[in-house]
Image 1: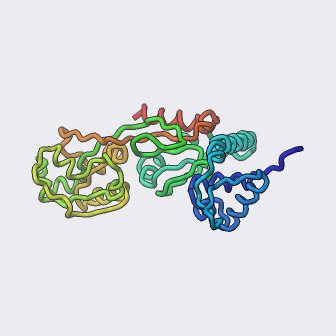
Image 2 (image 1 turned 180 degrees about the vertical axis):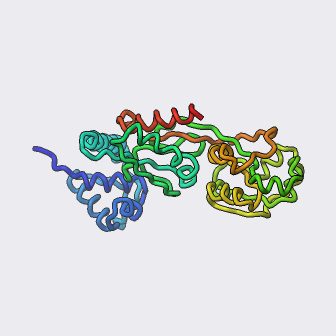
Image 3 (image 1 turned 90 degrees about the horizontal axis):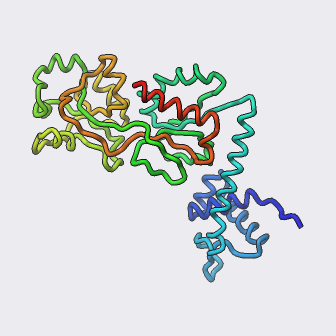
Length: 304
């Protein structure tokens, strides 16, 4: 006898087990928690066995049974294969959309100034940018490829190091002319320092305090100044002459080349423990549009 297809119920079970919550699974699947619970019960009835441990009252505790735990890797692999099959079908369709996830600052300061070269090389590929600050589920949100900043380890994703980064102070040429006293790091004590709050959650990213320590400035107090939660806006504030920013080398490269900003104290080197990585699901790495975009990113970095 053929087994009925319970794709929706399997998806509800997998999401519930991953989130350990019917409510979180419902939010991901855009249905109600009651609908998720009903789908899971339908699957349990068809299988003739429970998928989650239950208390004596019958209330579900979202801890998968041993049998369910064993089955989850195969179920997830099956969904990945289905997603890849759909991607293969899309490759043969008239619409060839490449969905790319990056941070808003990386999009503004690095990717968008260069994206015309990719589109010129791949005119039949439509690029769709996702610049959401929140973590993205590549499978659920149908993201093809992304650039992420961090230590290089994201569960379920392949990660290839694209660029390393260092940090250093920058200011506008006008501010430098006006404040000609910026000859040594200790002179920064008299300046307004611009802080990048968007990096506060990244362990290993150098702060103003770390840079000043590296520069040999003892006992420097840095909390005062301007605080901004977007790396691109930090650089714009410095361009506008509002103070001295601690710039990220990848973000500031074009502004330095164009003369909008000037690097201060280049003799002080302060590397970040984090880096930029090209990330994608393993099963999508050989899709032509993903491979093309990945190769283009590395070509752009190599070209400087």
